[in-house]
Image 1: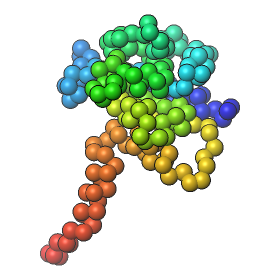
Image 2 (image 1 turned 90 degrees about the vertical axis):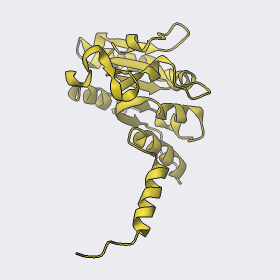
Image 3 (image 1 turned 120 degrees about the horizontal axis):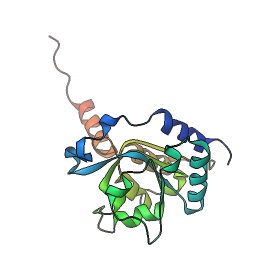
Image 4 (image 1 turned 180 degrees about the horizontal axis):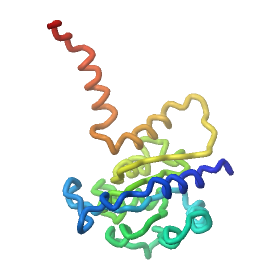
Length: 196
């Protein structure tokens, strides 16, 4: 919609690049069951925006980052997370994320073999329905940093979409929103300790 969201995300990616210490020797992370650390940014967007993202990266990001872009879509896409880990930008669609997550939620696809430095959901309205496969699959992506954006005007009331987006943003943190809410309620009803 011409609001400059793409340019802002690209500026963030260049300004807040991952430090080399983010990728351990050999690229494997012990805490994630051996998941490989990807120092790149995964961009999840609708199919109609994939080529636009690629053009914007090549036009607005200086080399060598602008040359290191992968479109992860179609039947010929890489099935190896190790290959995807070498890209600075990987652009994919909501349908690919959903299919790589699998119906059994095992997350064995290439996108789920990695812990990305940053995952961005473009047109986050595509992930608004918390019961939809795309929303749940996106929450399973491993990431150090998460972001979402969208230019679609909000309709009143914005509660269900806001919940799905909040779940996406908080799914990287320990526990779910429900568990944290339960813990907060329990702490609020616990009797206060006597003053000392």
